[in-house]
Length: 149
Image 1 (cartoon, helix red, strand yellow):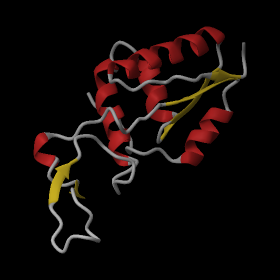
Image 2: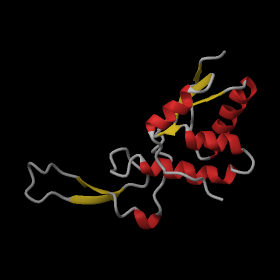
Image 3: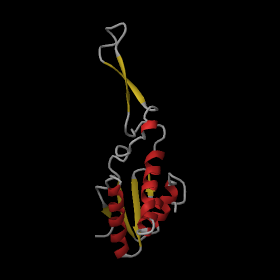
Image 4: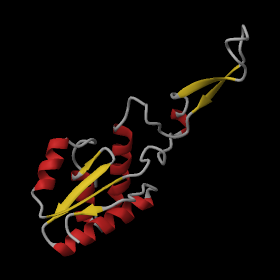
């Protein structure tokens, strides 16, 4: 079973759905690019050169080619890669935690998650489950805020 919809949410859609709820909750994913590793066959795509001696002094500097193992912020595929990774990861929780998965899909914009509920019990349960789901993917949601104590 797959999670429907596009990988990167429409910010206007996210905000409208968020504003319609009574109890609001918000957080972000800390360093959401770093836990995502490239597959070995894809690591050759994102490379950089490093000179071990001063290129201004030496006529022929010694250069080494390095490859990134993890997603970096400046890649032009941002914010697709983290969004696709999150959606891929949360699909395994679809049957057990349907509401939390739906909220992660519907209320996530890049690394910000702004969600809400009408019922207090759900407003406590959904973020707790979402936090645990994301923790399994090594994506940490550290700072939480809500309009309800």
